[in-house]
Length: 506
Picture: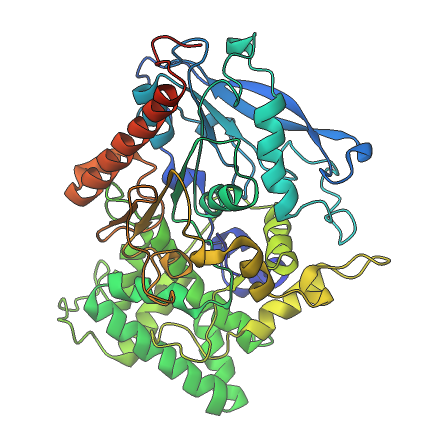
């Protein structure tokens, strides 16, 4: 999941900064462990002829990449675990169906095969290459993305199932995903039910929100109290300068962060807020993270600083400002990250559906971590800049589409009459305010039921159930074990209903 796209300007704002460093999205590199030599084979690659437009099959097909593993597959009639595709190209080196991942554990405990599918338009699954305009992106939409899953499940040829005995009408298919893929999983349950038997939706951002200032509230709750206090102080100081300072004072402030004097206030504010998003990639196995390091610098705790470790009161505005600026200049390098050249595709979703989810300041914002100079208007301007009208083709917001219309279509966080759909969220996940566990949801966070169980992992960030190694934490272990047990029960129910068993196959 991402903040706004500012590729053209952010590369000039800070030493070592890039657009990828300001991209807060679901990232397999952060949530899926690298494959280890644990006896499972590397997933095998395949290509599927996917329809360009499910409403107009005459437009033809494109090649959609997928990867499959049959290490745990029990034979004809056994289940299939399908990972809903995410908003990034799939690095096949990070496709992991071992039991270190939840997908692999689902497969192992249900004698199932596992499949990872790449999202349309991303990576090697694009019908238009990298020719991205308001015209060529028209077929990148939620409806097609959901129907891709249905068409794939019904029509894919799987070498380990040459006779089609594990097609959706003969075996239980399980759809699983986290973050946007989690939402895609839940939305498939709403808009295209009947193909998948069971669903696992983790950190599923089912509620589209235009001004998503709540993103920063769980981060504030998770921060050390001194870091939180001081970060609020330095942002308050930044706002005082940006809104009340002289031109010279503004230039001095921006220069402290190696920012150009002609950088707009909103772009500068976005740069200051972007490191906060690093929190969402935290796992119980993460150890000392970039986010921890940032807070240490805010509190002036670097080698040779000679500053005593402060209590909850922090170090104060000036020291915090200087420490944060030092970290941004010296340590906030993203050179080791892969450049996210697919960023416009996600921006299209935000502008077109529209998901929006702009992580900005807004009326009601109570966390104090974001400058008031960063508003929804700057994100809307990015939409206009990135996707100029081509002929009659433009993006949804420009046509008058709204998040309210989208939420009415999908049910948002109010779609609760589900069957065999489980929800998992993190207490400190920045995206939880857009899920069924949001405190802002009418009626409060969704209560757990037998058909729609809800788990919240204490003190967890984003997608913490995907990496089974998080079981080192007691709270995560209880949730992961509960999720796996529930999925086993639901899969077993399929065979009971059909008078067969996993061992019997078809």
